Structure formats: structure tokens, C-alpha cells
Length: 320
Image 1 (cartoon, one colour):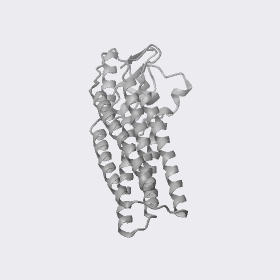
Image 2 (tube, helix red, strand yellow):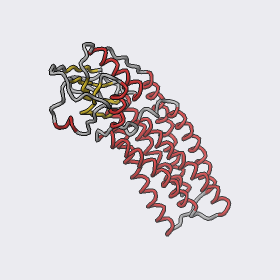
Image 3 (cartoon, rainbow, N blue to C red):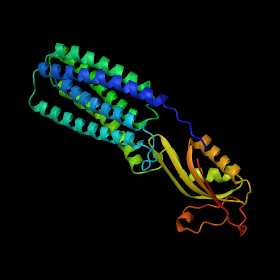
Image 4 (cartoon, helix red, strand yellow):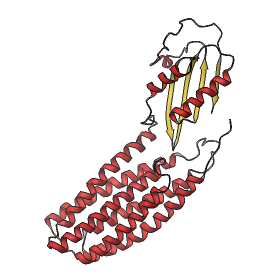
């Protein structure tokens, strides 16, 4: 069966990632210089986030480019997994930079540093606007479906919060003259980013370890498939995982003898695609009970199934 491939989403993601990378890299340099001159930890913390953002966006850009290469002889899925690896690295980097910022903030409580509030405020506002632009660019792509672009967007969101924190800290310092507001806001922003990094790390690790997608209950899928297609007696030997944005499924289905195997397979594939958005599945049809021990794990008989089956055996499979 023919496959159709739409490269428009990848092209949109790539162009927006490139624009976001350029904006982030430029304002990172501005914040490093401004933070150094003004003595603001909040600005330097935000520059640290921006440095990580620039690396994250570059990784995401490279992963998006290479993942579009056609499958090769020994890479039947192409390089789709690069997206997940990039997301995993980005999450780790975000965790590390957050820990470093919190550590530096704690040191500043013991040794307060003078902060030039006016310069800090001007640069923080410019950085906030730059991050809003980058976040808008990434959310206009297909980041919700692409773990890699979602990782980059989370980095930029964390930096946006950092810039907002720097603005608030600068205003408080200008109004009160109390410089510890600078490390306090840095810690609060870092804690907000920490939760996003943890979730991203969990999601990318699940995919790398070949876990089933979190939104799919395999037992429920088996029951529903058995109940919705009359010829199926039971479904077993189910394996479900995800490569990039592609859900991949293999299963065995014990069925009532049917001389229209191709039609039955088509109905199974249509049901999987309509109900679970699984367009890449390999289904093996069986007339006799599966002899392999792993096939019996979790096997449930369909309601009212006849325990007897014909002696004739047929196995057919369709890779869709």
C-alpha cells in the first residue's frame, strides 16, 4: 500500500527554528555583556538560559534536518530518532544550568553584589521581547506533535520566564535598593523551569526506552479491537512503540476463518488509524491458537467465543 509523505511541517519547523536560533544567539551576547557590566545575576542567569537555548535550538535544527533524510538499507526509519535524542540532551542541559544558577544565587546571599538597576532593566526588557518573539515562532510551527521542537520551545519558555524575572528584580531594586531581590528572582525562575525540564526528560526517555505512547492503553486497544471487528476472537502478542512522531504497532489476531483476508486486514488497519492514529502497523492473522508462550500473556477470549476452531491454519500479514 502506498505511503504519502508531507514535508511541509518539517520545512516550517526548520525555518522557524533557524529564525529563533539567530534571535536567541544575538540577545544572549547582549545579556552576557549587560549582566557583566551591571553585576546582575538575574541577567547572567537569563544569559545562561539563552546559551542553553541557543544550543537547544541548534540541536533541534540539525535533528530536524537529518531526520528528513530518506531511509537507508540499515536505517529503515531514517534518522527520526535524532529528534528524541536532541530533546533528551536539551532536557539534561536545562537541568544542569538550573542547578548552577541556584548555586550561584545561594552564594550571593552570603556575599551581596552591587547591581546597576537601570541598565539591568533595559536589557531585561529587550531580552523579554526577544524571547516572546522566539516562543511565538516556535509555537506557530508543529511543536505539539514534534518532541524535538517542543523541547526547544520549553527552553525558550524557561528563558522567557527568566527575562520576566529579571525585569521584576530590576524594578524592585530600583524602588527599594535591596539587591538580594536579584538572586531571589533567579531561584524562583529556576524552580519553574525545573518542572518543565523534568517532564521533557521523562517523555524523551520513555521513547528512547521503547515504551508505548503514554496516551494509549494497550489492554483497552486489544479489547476494543476484539469487540469492534466481529471476525476477531482475541488479540495478543501486541508491541507498540514510537519513533519520532510515528506510532508503530505489531500484533497477532486470532480470527474466525475468512476467505477475504485482505478485506479483513484493511478493516483492522482502518480501525487502528481512525481510533488510535496508528498508520504504521503489522498485523498477523491466525486461525489456530498461537503456540508461543508469550502470545498467551494477557490473552482474553472474546465474549461468546466458540472454543472449537477449524483444523485448517492460515497466517497472513500486511505491513501498512
